[in-house]
Length: 251
Image (tube, rainbow, N blue to C red):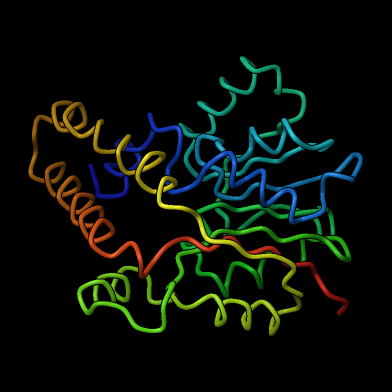
């Protein structure tokens, strides 16, 4: 089993595959102005097992197209949506975020929590802009430096893992340069990392290792996760997730 398959297996049983929270999704909805809309169409790209998708379906008068390339994640989302009587509001799609089959200007909003890094922030917003209707809303959370300077160990790690990590002002500039007008921003609190993501992930380590016979590859996956968690525990004042909201501007 390759590294990606191991990561998917580790995170499949998680409610979240990255930092986030229901309150934070609701805050983003408020800042977006979407609550007043009727019959909205929203694409939730890189939805994982659907933590944000379910909140969008609960809070908005909208049909949600939930997209992820991992079919197991999509299957789990479908099961939860049916259980919570949200199935009629959620359509699922197994697809890569880099090759989406959507028509141009077909969505009122494009949503992506903790996933755009897979494509890269600049590449993602450029590619997804065409799917938005005029004045459509983009809502994404993205790894963000919280200070101008940060410890060398932290910078070295994230520049290797995700070279596009940058400050909020730099991310805002990228939005403005690519046909968006920023309308809102906030940082995710630490509980979104610890309580909602890291601690539940750690609780699955033992079962994950046992499932894979304590293989060297599985142990390496856990070690990498533990390293990231330890880095965040030491350096949470310097890095986090910023949630960015922007409106598509005229061409």
